[in-house]
Image 1 (cartoon, rainbow, N blue to C red):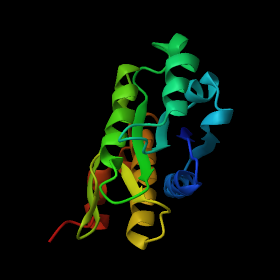
Image 2 (spheres, helix red, strand yellow):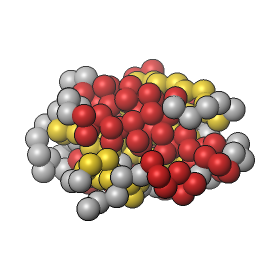
Image 3 (tube, rainbow, N blue to C red):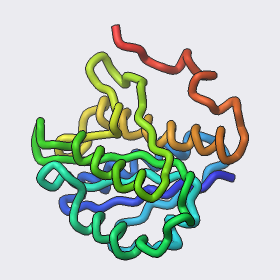
Image 4 (cartoon, rainbow, N blue to C red):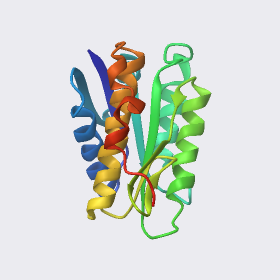
Length: 185
């Protein structure tokens, strides 16, 4: 059974709503145990426990939040080599369009890569103009169906990779499911 952690920080509740949608997407893949934990309650053991992790943060001046950064700097500092090779992705919400959410996702991915996580983006389009190459992003609350589907797709893809590479369930590999993918056009 694959183990997925959705770890998030949220000030307004918008990133928390994204976290729940990501968990919903991860639950769509069989045999996954999902935990959703706010950064204020997170422990190093939570990260060590999981096989795959989705890390989310509000966009703070184009970067991850200070609480999320502090968790990785302090709480996880002594955990080098205990998380190496786990699968990871990012998500972020911002206060407005062009608010830096993709850059915030990249800053999260950079932290995760430093710990040895295998990070990924998603090439699928959830609509003609919505991708999540760097992770799922939302302007404020994820109200629109496209944004909600992007969050679900990120969680589903994380669970697919965990099923495929950790549990050995090769039929969960996304390329085996081409018919489900929406391509631009």
